[in-house]
Image 1 (cartoon, rainbow, N blue to C red):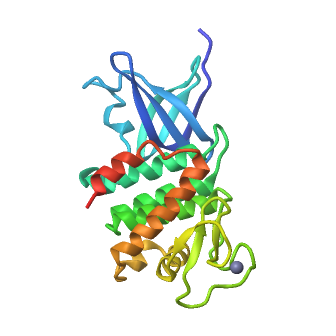
Image 2: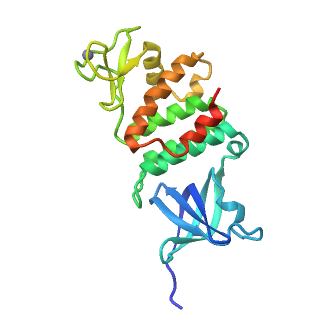
Image 3: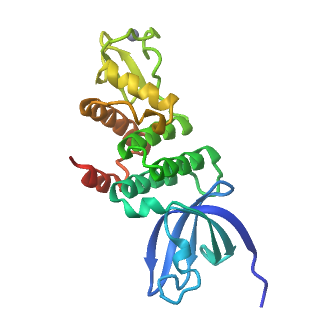
Length: 249
Ligand SMILES: [Zn+2]
């Protein structure tokens, strides 16, 4: 028998599907390896040694053996577990959504510590019960920034003029930012919505808990960032419809 290459690394499970009777194929994102797939064998049997270890919303130390198609998980040790997320449906929906955003933005076998940091930070925020929807919007903006598609929020895309206080603007998801209403292109964006977008880039959501954000302004930035995310990925993320369902007022 030839010795199989084994490695150990830190990663989180971002999605998974069932394989055969008892196995799961995991999609993992690691700060050291980027995105990759691995098989957790027998993990759905009640007697499994790996069992509860490969749950979502946990940072894991994994032992991996090289397999034919995918690596095989040989050991799991949880390093950090975000337990609160599992018990709150809306927080869990946002946590899965951000996991999908980060999974899709991360390339196979290419470490991207900035994207990984967005995911862990979002889970931390949700765990500390920062408002779920604010965390979702924060994560979308942080992800656009980390993916090199940072929207321009400080000056008009066309004439570079900084917006005045209280000025209504336009949001152009395709060009990536704001512009004066005098130029064509994009949907109207209120000055309150712009202020909130800028605050999300500058402050963490837990620092914004005390802010009273009108529902209409939340809806505006929801629409604006949704368009930007859709353009970045070419479609709505799969977990978006579940998120919409559990957060419908
Ligand atoms: Zn302008």
